[in-house]
Amino acid sequence: MSTNLRHAGFKAMGTYCEIQLYEASRISARRLVRRLIEEVNRLESKYTRYRDDSFLSKINRSAGDQTGIKIDVETLKLFEHAQTCYEQSDGLFDITAGVLRRVWDFSRKRIPDESELQELLPLIGYERLNWHDNMLFLPENMEIDFGGIVKEYAADSLANLARELGVKRGLINLGGDFAAIGSQPENRPWPIGITHPEDPTKMMSHFHLSEGGLASSGDYERSFILEGKRYSHLLNPRTGWPCVGLRAASVSANLCTVAGSFATIAMLKQEQDALNWLTESGLPFVFMDGAGQIGGPGLAD
Image (cartoon, rainbow, N blue to C red; front, side, top):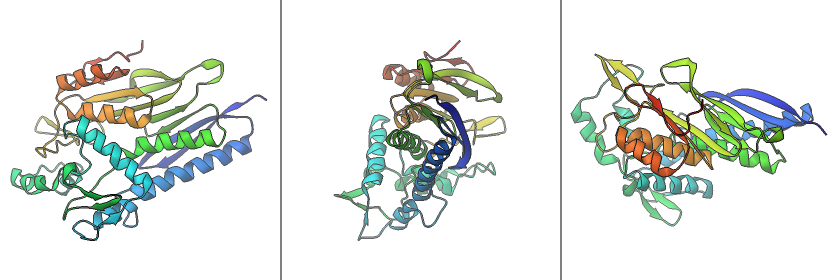
């Protein structure tokens, strides 16, 4: 039975998303897409910081509570991944650094005073989390933010669910974070364009994905320029100030979650350290440096 490529676009996690599936029946494809969208909505509802009823908000409200909060298996996996990222990045990738949003306002181009940052720095540090089995005791005034992990995790989750539902060929795209479910017919890879950081109408590069994931990180979406200086939304948890290094990085790996972690950690490092980090990973990648130059072994012609 021949299969046709089915497309479905939708909005989730604050961004445009798309699911592509090879499926013979249009009705079956719609049913599959509906189930996958339900899953991404579940993950968004559970881990968003914008809803008071999310589990993430419940975790953050437990800060300072001596009784702690029980963490379920799925969320424990996110914490474990976050700890790995924290250790591999020497503390630069830190899901407790979200408290810095209390004084940084990128929409209004507000730059905090050093004194404001110094008040918040003692509240940052993954190593400050207290665990007893699956019980988390979050110190007072600290908070957790899975924003640097959950979209990539969701892409992998949707790909796994699609496989369980019988999908053999497909591509998940959650706002530029991709997870492939096999190649296209005749073993053709999925062509993926990487948007140019300085001109969204152009492509910086192209990747060809048959399995695994692809993720990008950059300072182009929420950064601002004030008096000739660029302020990235990616903040150094040690200083509270924006990171200064690469402008953008895209990485391909066996999982979208892994790709996203490598890309984000690269963005948090100094430029040369970032390039060394990416090169030593052995993964395909492309980057834009601080001078606007594009390079990397993943660069396609």
